[in-house]
Amino acid sequence: MIAESAREIEAAIWPELQVITDPAAARAIRIAEERGFFWAALLPDARVDGDVLRLQRLARVAIATEHIETVSDHGESMVQFVLAECKRAEGIMDARASAGS
Image 1 (cartoon, rainbow, N blue to C red):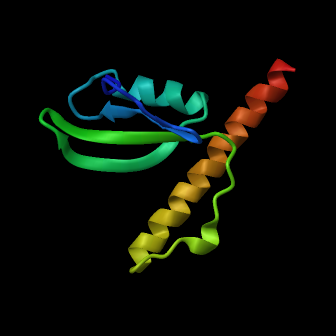
Image 2 (image 1 turned 120 degrees about the vertical axis):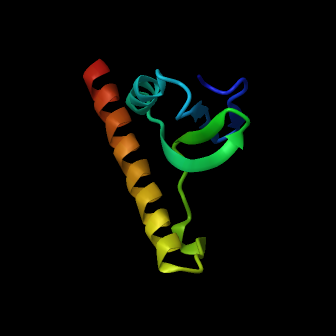
């Protein structure tokens, strides 16, 4: 379900889920979202067995949005979607932290 190796860099983690071929993908996505992961990319035909949904979780790093450049309105819409998802994920994590305190 989650790709053999989640890519980890100092400030971010990117698990990849097979979205079409894995019947448990919807549940895995929901669980990942509860843990602060959010949408990063849909990669069509990224694997031999189908499409991949890449999620991401940032380690509370600031995103310098002033440096993001797009070449189309669609690209700008995607940037805004991902940034909104990031804020939503931060809200979930903040709520979990408050509930645990």
